[in-house]
Length: 86
Image 1 (cartoon, rainbow, N blue to C red):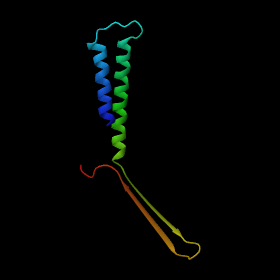
Image 2: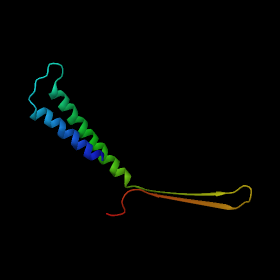
Image 3: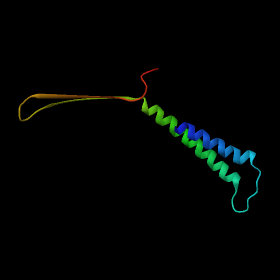
Image 4: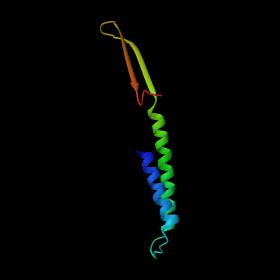
């Protein structure tokens, strides 16, 4: 979703910069357009980084000895995020 939001911000900023020719006394629409384009590029890059992190696999295995009973306790935890397809 953040990739789409980044693209939308970039497009809205480009429209304000290149297509709208309105002079407003109290605001500079070109500057707002450039800010939106920069924010859109930043959100797009953050979305790609977050999508790449989501496709990681983490496995944790812990072994300990129970002091009360003297038994060995093994705990395994597997976490898989993202799609299983390539």
